[in-house]
Image (cartoon, rainbow, N blue to C red; front, side, top):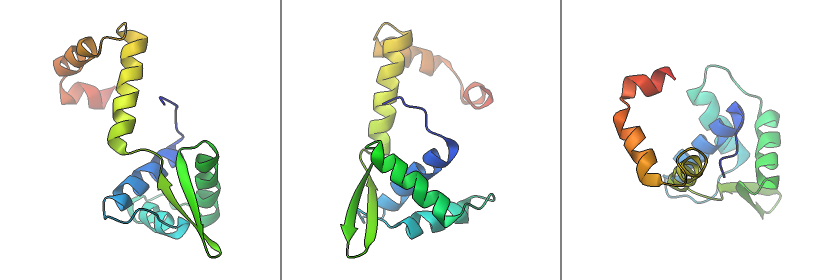
Length: 117
């Protein structure tokens, strides 16, 4: 799951995870469009967001449900699951699969160092 997401893909996932915290399971492209354009200075076109959301659906990163003529989306996994899976993959690649070793490395870093990397 440690696939690299483009900047807009990451923004869409972050927006959906935040919207899903409100309790609603599915959200329209317009919901995501509004969320992204409220929090970013670089405004994105509705059609661009829709195209990227459709691609995320094709990659099985989003789930799409049709209601009437409209599609609604939700993430296939939570933010926490994405982080855990990514950390496990990093541990497998760089720490011989030892998550404890990765944890020790992370604990030894301070927040200032991580921000500057």
